[in-house]
Image 1 (tube, one colour):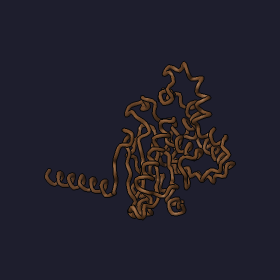
Image 2 (image 1 turned 90 degrees about the vertical axis):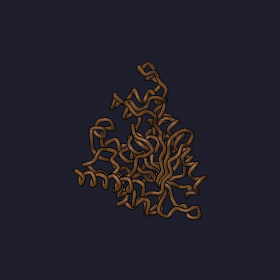
Image 3 (image 1 turned 30 degrees about the vertical axis):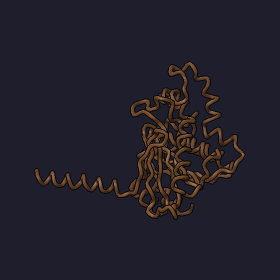
Image 4 (image 1 turned 120 degrees about the vertical axis):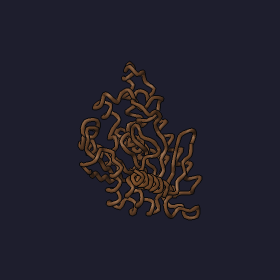
Length: 276
């Protein structure tokens, strides 16, 4: 029994060490929890590059790439940052007008960018990544001019707010909450206006700007197949992005879930963090 306790204790210690190996800062920005993990080469004189991750439904600012991918990212002069874009820890998660590509989500990410660029002097052009639901806000950033981008990475991103609204009725309560609509569905007629203003699939079609390259990496699960509409939804998104000058890469690891953090490893293999 003592041997078992010793082994368990050693495992706990090693786990703590592995979690605290990084130079990180956890803080609040306008009462929203945020975190930055600094690259191995960061200094005020040579701050380097920044990767901002926008998390998925029911997640938070503590989501990381896989350990292998994060190690590579930090070694290649990228710091990694995230902020809570959604409040609520139980279904349907969005319980106070946050998440699902609404303006509050966008403004939180924008405030994080502005704070980090001002405070830590990172290069102004950044990489933005969006996981699942976070892909909606990532897409808005691609179209708007507030955050200059090197490129964007979708980790199993929602391809369109309208698609998930139509394909996944169980998500509608959370989406109504996010956009301050009546929870019973009495105001669902307003969704068409919301799609035109907040859905990146439609924002892309209405922009005249040249858009940065997008890398989409996804796993295959019921959410991808049913809620997202499968690969055809990403292909439709790619077609309109490419008509706006973006080069779109779509790759999968079918053995993972749609937004699994190991998908960053494909981005590493594609040279995303060394080519930009």
